[in-house]
Length: 124
Image (tube, rainbow, N blue to C red; front, side, top):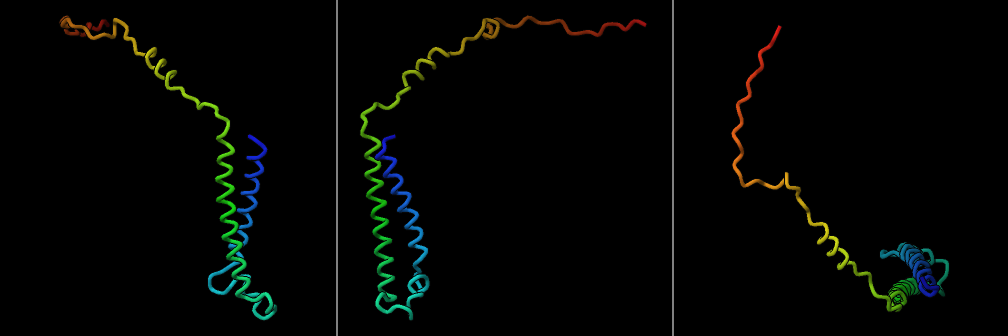
């Protein structure tokens, strides 16, 4: 794997962890981080905190989407042909045709009538 692929993957993991943190900080009913700033700080008020967290959430989602697409292009640019084993499988299947021994082949002759089995006399 290339260093670019690994670097972009690390960025995606970090952004995903940040996204989880930001989503857990916000709440849809006025709870969460925004409710903690109601009385304490009016300059950076409740509405501004919620707006900031929402913009940060969408920014992280967009970042993950774009970097994921870029990462997918970094893996497919080496022009190596894919592995195609269909010819090998067909050759093995042709060579592996079952061969029946002559004794296992069905006979076209009628089976000979066998004499009924009789019990041997017991000698004492």
